[in-house]
Length: 139
Image (cartoon, rainbow, N blue to C red; front, top):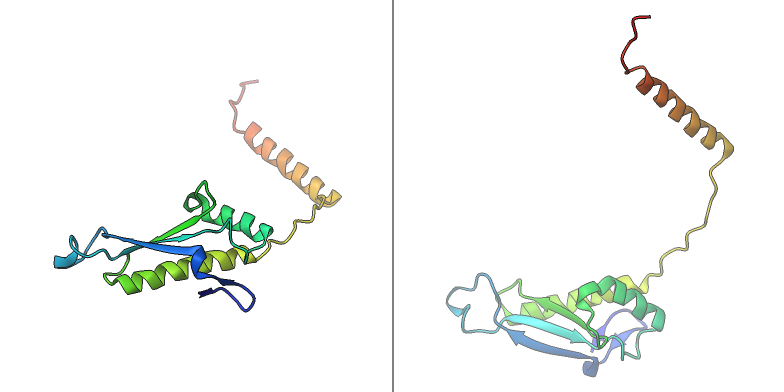
């Protein structure tokens, strides 16, 4: 069972792990021991997450979100399988915690009259500078 916060916990049936050989350093064991971890979380079927959280999680996960609604997290940083399991679990928890935070709604504002005037004055000033860069007539 993975604990996200006080109110949300993920059950064991929602998460599955598979192990494979990691790329990169590993010494003599690199071709023998499966230390890399692929953690698969069935996010779409999870009863612990609300639909709004699932939508935000899908956006955060990006390419890690599969067509059947699972989030796949991989970890192969460490040479130890146990440490990679913990790392993959931490990545998943961070992703879900980020999805828990609802973004603030943007309040539309209009530019003030003074800011419009300043912008137009700056534009005309800049246009004058650029117009002065042209060829000088002999008249």
